[in-house]
Each structure stands twice: as structure tokens, then as C-alpha cells.
Amino acid sequence: MRAVALVPARAGSQRVPGKNVRELDGHPLLAYSIASARKSGVFESVLVSTDSEEIAEVARRYGAEVLGLRPTEIATATSPDVEWVTHVMAGRDEEIFGILRPTSPFRSAATIRRAFEQLVELGDRADSIRAVELARQHPFKMWVLEGDLMRPFVDQPGEGVPYHSMQYQALPQIYAQNSSLELAWSHVLEGDPSIAGTRVAPFLTEGAEGFSIDYPDDLERAERLVANGEAELPRLEKTYSGLRPT
Image (cartoon, rainbow, N blue to C red):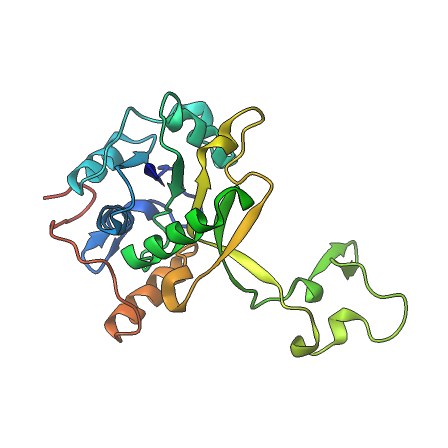
């Protein structure tokens, strides 16, 4: 099966400014996704989609391709992923595409191979596979604010103990998606395009594979995991300092 890796690296992150090129252990986050994709042996090409020439320069330095910058109109904070994916995949004929977000630096080449093999084995029983993990904050215990009061986010049973008052262990297991990876058959981009299709299979991440850097303190946690030997980053050969590689 011919596959292509897509690494999104928009410049305008709001929660963690410049996150895609923020350094972790001396290299930009972007570099680790490129490295794991290349070392997996799964992809024929590793493409970075960005609206920034500076980020594009970093991507090329670490071995990825950048086939032109992402248009401004599909590079906003609210632009759906399907827009940049269809932009990058236009005219390509790989059977599978993978989305590898730079915010998951501990996703390894072995992680990617495991997910790829799972999707191929599923064949036409699934349109895509997406990384998930057990939800730590259960949605049955979430609330919506309404004026001075609040109501449960999830409808409650008509009688008995309400969900929000149950022990976690008594609630059904709920899985939350993380940003580790998404792999899909390219046919999901045909007709009414999506990045997942309607038949989505779970890929259960293990250990730090699903760790995501979405807030400033997540980067500090990632640094501690590396320093304590609790998580391992893909090995990189290039050196990097500041926004521009050296």
C-alpha cells in the first residue's frame, strides 16, 4: 500500500505561540514527527503543510517536503483539517494518508507501523483509524453553564443515582481522541470529503505515545518526561538553534 505522511504546521497557534518550532531537547517539535514518519518505513513521502516560509525552512532541514505554502484562507484558527488535507492531496494517488501532528513528539516509528498494519488488516471494514486513550475527565461529569446555574452536559437517567454522582468505575468506559496519529484510506477525500470517513477504528495509544503539547505547561511536562527517562524522543541527526536551523 502506497502511503504519504502529512504533518500540519500552521504558524498561528494561540494557546502555545510558535509551538510547532518550540524546542524540546534541542530540536523543534516539528522535527520529531518528521523523523518518526521517515523512520517508520511506511511512507513514500513526508509532506509538511504550513503557511510560514520560516517553518517550511525548518521542515526541509529535517527532511520533509513542502509543496508550496498553505493559502491564508485555509490557515486560520478555525479552518477544518479537511481543507488543508484536500489542498495537499490534490492530484496525488497514494492509497493511504497519515496525519502526524507535531504536538505528539513521543509518537515513534514503531507506533506508526503498528497503526498502519492495523488499518491495512482492517481493509474495507474501516475508513480510517484514530488514536484514542481512556478519558481521564469523564464526559458524564461535565457541565454546561446557564446563567447562575449549570446543567449536566449528558442527559441523566430518569431515576436512581445521576451519572455525575457515580464513581468513575461505575461509569461506561469512554475514550478520548489524542493527536498522536490518524491514518485513512484516501477515498474518504472523494465526494463529500472528510479526513476520517464514517467507519473509524480505534488505535489505542500506549504510555507517552498519546502525549500532546497543547498548553504551555505541557512542554515543561514533556521536558521532565525526557529528563526522567519516562519517555523517549525519536533520534535526530540535525542540530538546531532558535527559529532558523544551523
